[in-house]
Length: 440
Image (spheres, rainbow, N blue to C red):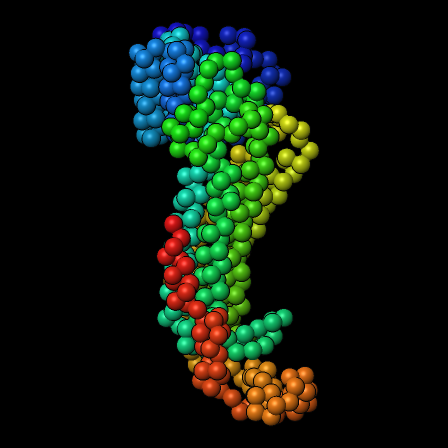
């Protein structure tokens, strides 16, 4: 095997000796990229195998050379799976570490893997493969959460509940209608994913540094082999899309977690002393070091906190790309961390949300007692319209001026009057169940 490997793919000084300024420069510019890249190694290896095959098809590599490179890349993958593949700071990134390892195994043949490509299309391809897989994971998790929320709503659909506007009692609702709304929001988020999926499902491989290559690479075949829908058409689009697509992806993820954020806020409010409508299992509450009685909703509070962190990831991406022109800029290296963090946060929040739903139960008597007379004021006005033939505006004034008239209706009476879709008497949970079943 060839000795004297270059630590960096661009490095001219083969001795690898660095001045103090170079060491300081390396520490700042590499940052924690060599650590973050560990997650992306299998995707870079996958793309490298496909790239090597494209080089074979273009007669740059012989079949034997391709087979040796593929074997070498597969061996690196096995090493990575065992946790033994190292990316050092002096490597800068996974691309250098992988190529150095290949060269160590195969000599000069290992150096051929970089023909007709750049680290620019390498990292972007690996990142988009990672994003495709992780988004599928998020959608599967989101569907589980929607299913659980819907089941909770179906079980409790006949339990009355005050509906609130301005955090004040407004009109009659039900636990089924309350929970059904969160289930429907999750279903809507699943359906909204198609737009983001179409953005990340274009292959950057073969765009090289952003201007293509003079080697006859079949980019459509590369795209098919990697499972993308199609290649990015203009090579210049690849680097222009970096960060821009990631921003929309992370904004989508923040939309997912915003649903859990609002659910958590409701649970915090509705399990407290002011509105004791639900009870949390003690297993998912925490205590106080000084107050023995406390059952704190830390799980729900940290769902909100982690959502805030995720929106910060989107803000980071927004600012990173705000002043960049076309082509590659080193700033784009920093778009990687917010994406990785956003996926971790989203999956953690979804899992915590399911734990919250599973350990939540209605306080039925408290909910019924909370459905006091003021909730039926609008219905009393409606009753005057139906029975007396007065205008609604006149009926509104009568009830407003004589609030003692707001006491004749009850939950059963009003529920039976609500027959339209999405009301306390007909929350539409069957329709939601059908919609959920169509979500792939």
